[in-house]
Length: 223
Image (cartoon, rainbow, N blue to C red; front, side, top):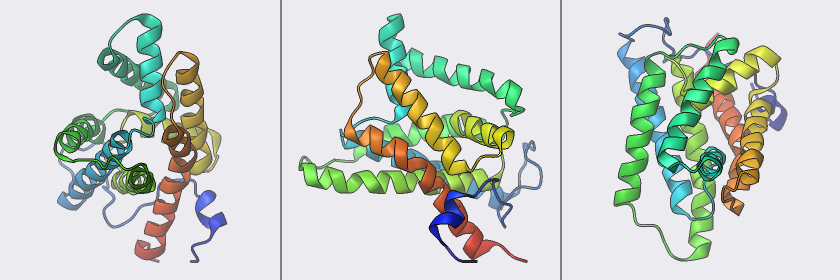
């Protein structure tokens, strides 16, 4: 199987690979599935922290949370919590259910972001921060793909992505980019701060996830 532009941009469903759990709803998953779940979430959280630390722009979802906070006169933390609840509510018609991976996502990603921002010193030089930006997108994409393949339950935003992909039949890259651009525009309209890094992240995170999934299939798919 060749790794071409078309092959990863058109990828649809999340594949079953050697670390995929046989039962998504189990609370006692195989060790290998749980290990890859945690590893993927750590990569995801680290990638998000790097993006935030560059000061080139927050992720589209954070921009949306900032916009809601300004519009309703609430704290950003409260807004992030409410956004998570709204997304989980949107899961209902998409037939997504919060399970072990969803809870792990909420806990691990937040912890990794906090620890990273407290312990990593980011460069002041603008050109170095621009070099960090693509790394943050790549790590976020690889992390997302890794934990999604474990199939122990997606986080709120990735669950929205997989649910919409299943409902529409569109490629993952198209679905994810559409979601990111929509919340980016809505957050900007409500007053959220948008940077150049925000726009680049919104455009590239879908292809980064799709490329990671296709790479995994290329190297790990058997039969």
